Length: 476
Image (cartoon, rainbow, N blue to C red; front, top):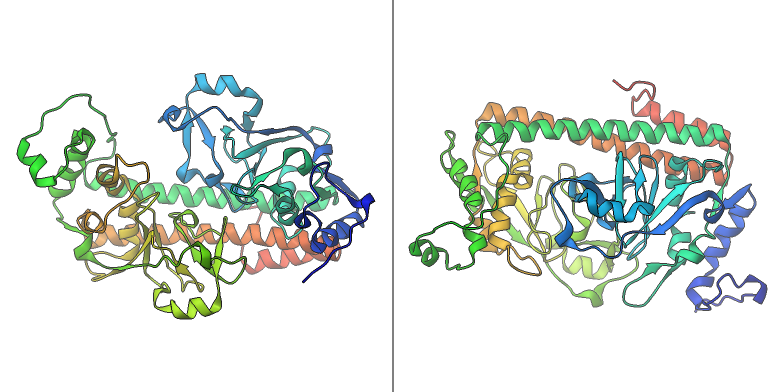
């Protein structure tokens, strides 16, 4: 049993005396940072506010102001792949949390996270904190975000999370989070690395958009937009065949997608014929630990990566018992519950992990018909997403049944088109990988500057970037 003795003078909260707040490692972090010139969040911000509270999913729109939720805070950058929008009129009610490019968003619930705003404008939800730095701040926003994601920043955020069922960051106390004031030269160096990381990530987005354009143009759906109709007619035989009577299932927009696939000149097939499907496992929350082998849930999966946001772990012993569920290289992880239809290709040999019961493992049967890269693109495209909306719609908790997964329609593009798509996806993957590596270099560089000195850290950063064959001055 670990025991900490805390002097009354070291009490740091007006209303918390719980043991977690006074864990020895928090004092070690505080001691290390106070040896340097330092400040705290409260001293550096002009805005530090909880996001919009009185808003719900019914308010989301197809266009408007991007609305950032905690699920969008990934790897220090706003993940735009799952972004939703709120109308301009709604946004005008909450201008005090309207953010611009290079502002900052922290997580307020569930787990610590900090991301740089890379959008021109956005507003943010109640499970996050909107931050604007003062014009006189001694900290630039890029350095702020990198530090907050370091081993000196994340634990400080975690320290101020309170609650039993739903953890949340206490706004008042979290303003005490200590930030080292490193030299402008070093901070600007971190900013430069961060900036280039964002630059090549945008390149990855553009390349992926081009692949999606190739796919949709082949099916004559380049400018297709789903249109919800208030009235339409269906035959009773259709109801009998599908065993569904809800109007949403029979929306004509879904027929437009199905017809485009079934009439495609290159042909089509069902997902069940193209892949072998393996189920995953659900050991139960009692098996979760604070460390160990990652247990990957739907919330950890995106179409670009597996994240460690709110990561759960299982023991080494349990992992060995469940090792047959370990994903393999070139499998595709596909979500079927909660947020069905997220597909991620394990292009490289995956780390040790066990996927949850909400994820399926797909193995391509015949690469001559469909490569993993192509199939992943189709699964993440509107072609399959619309089929999922039809199949899994109407429930509070979305569930895509295994028979529905198997019967999903997949167009089979010709070899040359698939080869072109695969090449572009590989380029996009390489850009994303380098972007992530740059942010990791920036983070380790900040930690090195804190623990050793700035000169050594700067030299190490330059060496790591050279090893990646990157020129930070090249934005072409």
